[in-house]
Length: 365
Image (tube, rainbow, N blue to C red; front, side):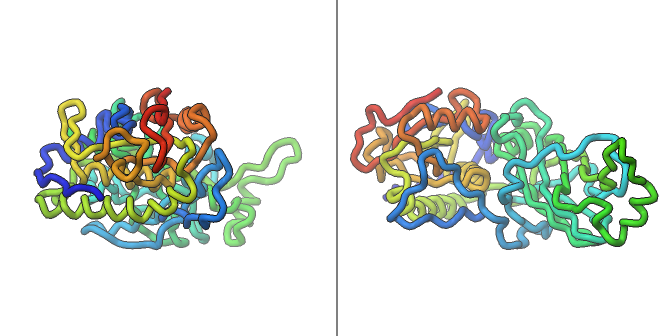
């Protein structure tokens, strides 16, 4: 069982959330720094090297004063980006109404307001990429959200920033965020009855050329994101205790799945944080660790373990985030790290076991 978290105020809330934070320290004692799909039954393990199933978008919920809705990030959203190219002609699918300076919501989401200009729903994905070296890790350089806006409607959606981006906002007081809305789910213009005639007149069929799509799918905007007006991170020991309790609940909920489906195999270890860890002069507490884990959980379906519950960790008081993809050897897990764009030493291979000793249970790139 995890010990009670020390009750200390946060002096650098999202500061620790990153600078090197997101993935620094992928090991508990071995340095290295939506809703998740339901676990399969314990009678059958996933195939070795099988990628975790991407979660479907979470049920819409409104939080924070902005009222921005959280849709999660499903299968397409996980890999979306750069659909279309500048210079396309046709009907603009979406207009990004948000501009200028936008304060974050307290949970690290940016409220982005969109208007669908089509007679059919505008669907696809939204990427939020911070324009700074600290936040440009290839693996997690952009926050992601599903995009669903009804025909002709306006909607405000919450798009999460990555933890390095949050760190930039905190340390510098602001960050420029590049938004891309790709509208990949919108039909071709010729297949939208209300626009078919207009498309045919604008883009007549030519057997010698590919008929243009007729829909301008990508919408882009740069905005300046600033810290929340209030409520960023734990502001009191009570908030820190609540974060600690949530981490305990996550680890307890994930333990049956880890025991039945992942244990005694190699898997990617994405993060490891001890309460009170000082990383580059900044202190990690349970609130920062929870922020980091939730983003990895949203993106990779990650699981959380408390190192004290497993014999294969030498440090017994760390929250460890693992990807639920198993391999027969460490090289397979390290290959996953490489294929998913994690820089060297930002993702490690770990064998989580209730019986295996720490020696020989960890490897890094």
